[in-house]
Image 1 (cartoon, rainbow, N blue to C red):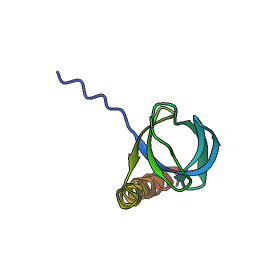
Image 2: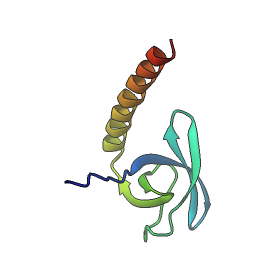
Image 3: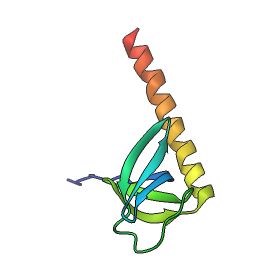
Image 4: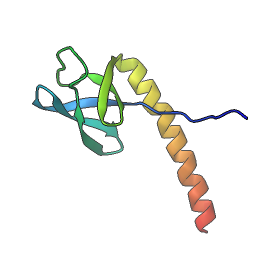
Length: 89
């Protein structure tokens, strides 16, 4: 039997720098959260795109790749909403 567990990392954009190890990141759909950048080892600036896993930024991301990834997530969320509304009817 194959164990098919998977962890997800999600792109987000830095909207506010709180201090040298903490930022506020925008995940899309109006969701903003504090995220640790303590593991990054490089300077972050407003507008940078980062990949978040369990509340920590793990790498920077190219802006175009981030937007493409978020567009794919949007498709998934939209499909989930459609399926959820059918079940609720």
